[in-house]
Figure: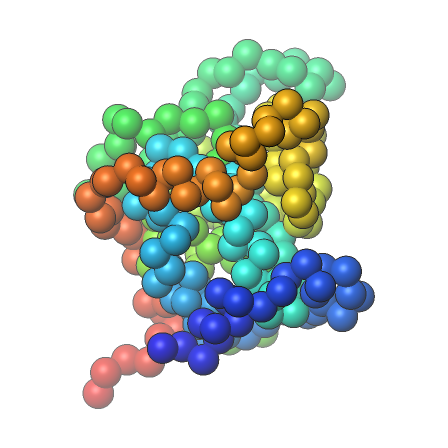
Length: 226
């Protein structure tokens, strides 16, 4: 078991969140791969159920990395809209779809948005990039451009935001510590939309294990066998 696994599962993230000691410094790619593998190995985040649950899943992954003392971010992707001038609303012209490892588009996956964990990482070449952690579709962290490519959207339709900050394009909701950023939670006494319970409901749905894309960064920088 990875040495960070107990922290991912049991550390009190809320105490970390209240402290200014959460680190905003970029982590190494080696550490990023360890975090990704520990998250991907968890069986309580419903990574195989890709039709729904990305917002709750992203929030729970953010909790996990904050428990490690790291400031969390989220990577957001949005469907293309025909937005005129400075208008914030526009007609949806193309939903997000997912390109599978066999280069075919999954006909069952279409979204207005997708979101997951992101962290700043210092690559072996010294450059710092925000890497996207999306075990639903990759076997390791990836650059924002690689992530947007398999979501079949232009690069400019994807970006990162700090944990707790909702992009202006996002007209739905995002989870904040203990509650949602809209009044919807106040009318939901059963807590259906709280992230842990939402994912627990998805775990009850039996789905086959999905194949995922290889991470170009893992392939490039992992030690090669002799």
